[in-house]
Length: 572
Image (cartoon, rainbow, N blue to C red; front, side, top):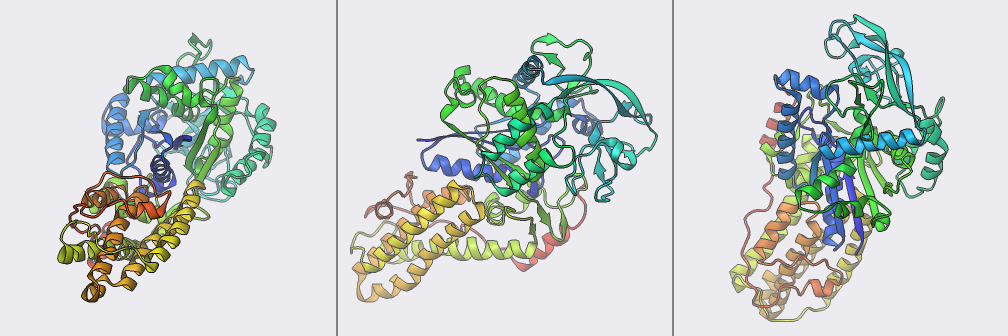
């Protein structure tokens, strides 16, 4: 049994996420977690809300609530939506937790001891209209590299170039829009990433199996221009983790907090501590996942994220982990994703464009969305959500292929043999050919899932469903029954066992429908089909079942048109 540690990029607290955010991290991470649990592996799947920084403060102000109260409320909302989407986190934590406060301060102290933190007297942009220093991301302007007019002061989301606020053309406050900005002196701490450059370079060179998307972004940041730069890890803000050197005060850093990008990845580790506390576990129980001196040396650690988060997870967070000189578990594999675009444009939380997670669940159950998003995951390139494609995929894959198979075989059995598995007849040549074909396909499905090839996994799973349909069409038990009822009984028995098999294989993608299929087949047997012959005899003769409700209703043209019109505007 393998031990798999899985984290997905932690969603920001300031609002409900859109489908592009979901498919870029949490959903494929859940797919991988569910699959590995299904194979009998020990899984720890961690995520959290990212709660610090100016966006949280501004969102709380807009909501008319204290920032801590706002974050607690939003964490509850995001937890509820995650549960409704079937995201099977072992812990959905909070970056504002006591565990993350303590651990972030601990890492800062260790990095300081290692000579990897320096104090910098610097000039920062102050907005007179807002009465505050503006963090880099809250200064907007035109990117000097690509000309995008909504570039932020830390990075242009259009071309991904790392920026400083002073690089921007025509800078303005993203809070008020004011151009009444001035530069003032302040002192901050910097993580000396430049000292880690060669170590990081060698480490990434050793990851030949990583997606090209992941390594190419990391290498670009390491080598483009002047190479990897030191990065500020503190900010002049009220809300955040107070700057300390371990448990000691940090002279000159009074009133400052750690920058959100520094503490957010550390929450992956702290989240395991939150899990231990929530479940009555000891420190040893979470440390066996994260400390290589306490049992984590045999753990495979996989991260899932959108491409915009790759630099922080390939460079900054590893700098923190390696630089501490402590035996923390480093990531083994980073699965990164391109962007999912929306109907001819981009999903955008800030601009309210696209379908958001709560809205999606108001329209259709989670499995409809899970299937489409995963089967169209933006792996090798950006992909695009359109209502026409969504309708076609749901209707063809889920309703016509899987749902139709389950409906036909259960209803036919009920009409001819009753609601129990018929026992007559034996599997013949046609059934053995199907079993051989399914064995090849299931092994291919496993290989794609092990390799985290999301779209290929979905294609193979659909092919497995199709194989059952083609068998049923070819065997035609409704015709066989007229001349050879025993042979028809064997064909039906195979078909009913296929439903259980499909439920097990499909659970990572469509867990609710999978549970419905298992319930209809009146079984708790979720054993993985290591031997397909055995798997297709799991439901014995005389085993009772019931005809399930329609698994997937088709999306009508009218519904598709209505939704397209409804979500073409801005979310307020």
